[in-house]
Image 1: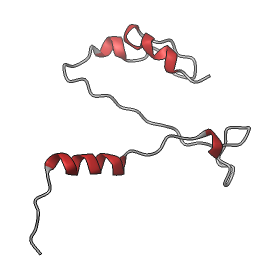
Image 2: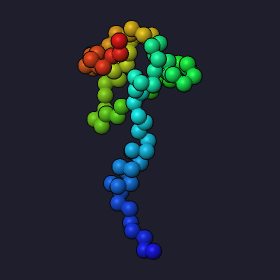
Image 3: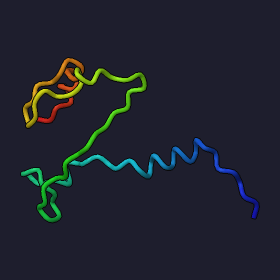
Image 4: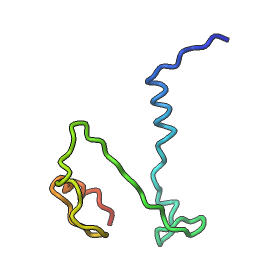
Length: 84
């Protein structure tokens, strides 16, 4: 059987689909926000960003830690994404 070359774009599209996880659905949770299967708490999520032109780190790093830390100048747009 002859081998067909795999296009780079096709490979990357398939790899991205295999790596990206499904978002957490409300149907998977009970009233307390824990997983229905074994009552374990939800995992902590990790996000990362890549800025092609760079970022001013002093404006991007949080000034405090904890649940209600104030958003810096460059993060104020994220307020609409905050969980309630």
